Image 1 (cartoon, rainbow, N blue to C red):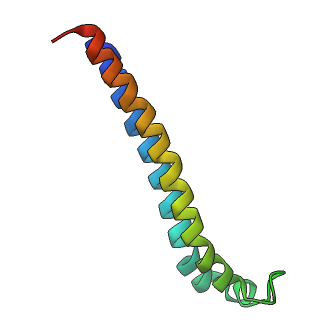
Image 2 (tube, rainbow, N blue to C red; image 1 turned 120 degrees about the vertical axis):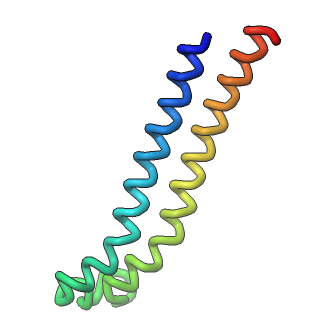
Length: 91
């Protein structure tokens, strides 16, 4: 049973690492793009002519909520598995 618990904890940590990597890369996308490709991010986008930099900045909020929601759902399912294993294993 201990090996199963460790496997679930590793799986949870791996998922957290993946989500953290994606979130940080999207977070740093705006400053890096403003430094290196200013001509692209200052062009008007397809969405009401808002520059791409502003569009990326506004998209950070829903992306953050999306990643948090997905991670929360997956973490909750893993916690339920751990609780089920704990009940099966006894005291």
